[in-house]
Image (cartoon, rainbow, N blue to C red; front, side, top):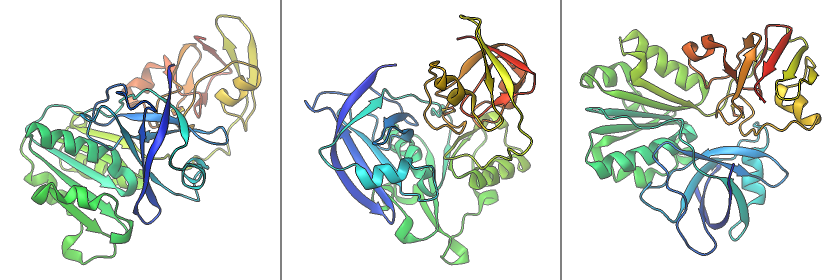
Length: 316
Ligand code: FES
């Protein structure tokens, strides 16, 4: 996959523990175009690769802007961005990919939990530029932790800020939002697992069709791995088999044997590592595929998913 070298043009504090990073080509030229909801993989100091949503207007061809929450409890990507990346640094990134695209609708409801605002801000910019009907809700712990509020306020009455430490009257009343939305509206939600589950379950209980609810997880909930065992993975092109130990991921085990699979989030969220499965039964642990896609059993995410059968044959 093509990698791009970009310079950190500007870094700015947007809220408590949230900084934005504006990336550009060193020669100021155009970057590959992106659509609202896209993300890029950033190769970080220390060798980590992490996906970050783009949160600038897609019509801005010269820049990619990221919003990054410094989460000390995470697996190191956001801390590396905050502690080691400064203006003038050169970073290696992937071209943009979009797993969370906008669809045409009479009205769009954008719901952000915390730093999940980043792809939704980009969507709001696009919808506003098109003159489309939308509303955007940002749910945050406090005003100090609310990023991009100044930009969001430019959307006027379409922007709603809900603070955990605020008065009851300003809290998100999701059933009321859903009931007020015209038929055919689409719902977009991004944020932590608990927030997304709450939105998805509320939409379901209010009769929203599942195909009008679009989501992007910001991080996966911890998995219970106590029952995990070992299994074999066979590479179709070479016929070689490798044992995946109970405490190893497929991608890490194969990499140790020189079989490289590109990974980014390493928690089944971004879809970067998707690999076709030719034989065997997958034990899907990701949040990327729909239940229908998982049932097809023809591809899986080796960064976190495992096997229910003794052997998995991969199309590598
Ligand atoms: Fe993101 Fe596997 S690396 S889903």
